[in-house]
Length: 220
Image 1 (tube, rainbow, N blue to C red):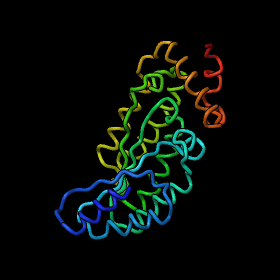
Image 2 (cartoon, rainbow, N blue to C red):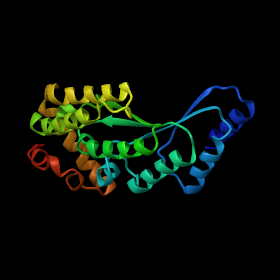
Image 3 (cartoon, rainbow, N blue to C red):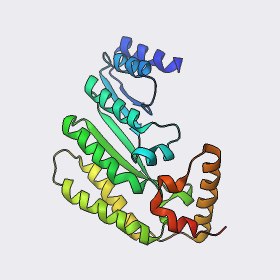
Image 4 (tube, rainbow, N blue to C red):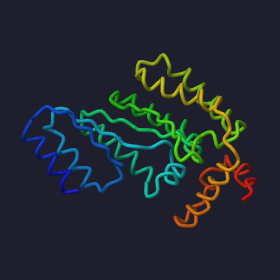
C-alpha cells in the first residue's frame, strides 16, 4: 500500500533505530521486490518474514495464488541482495505436514549459503477441522518418524537456533500423541475442501495423495 512505502521512507529519514519487521508473501512483482530491497538499505534494524510450509503443488494448494518456484527464487534474491534476516513462519496443519520435510530441506539449503535464514513452526488449533488431530494416527506416525530422523541429523548443527529445534520437537511429539478428533471434525474437513476445490478449481487428492483413502472414506 502507499502507506507502507511512506512508512519506510519515514523510517529511513528519521533513523529512530526502531526494529522493523516486514511480513510479505514474496510473490509480488519484480519491481515491488526491488523496491523493498532498495528501501531497506538505509534502515538500521530491518527483518523480513514470510510464510510457507510445503513445496510445489502442495504449497500452491495451501496458499492460493502462490507460485512456489517464484516464491523460492525471490527468497534467495532477498537473501543475496540484502544482509537481513529472513524468517519463514511455518504453519503445521492437517495438510501442510505432508510436505513439511521437503520444505525443511529447502530451508536447510538456504541456510548453508545464508545463515541469516531461520524458521519457526506454529501449530494450528483453529479451525479445529484443520488441526493435525483430525488425521488418524496411521497417517501421522509416518510423518512424525520422518521428521524425527531429520531432527536427529540437524540437532547438533550450528546452522540451527534452539527455538527452531524446539518448535520442530514440539510438532513431532504432537503428531504422535494428540488424540484423534471426533468424526464430525473430519466431516467438516471434507465439506470445506469439497467447496474449496469447487471454488478454486483445485483437487485436494492431486496435491495430497497421502490422504486419499482416509478422505474418500469420510461419509457425509
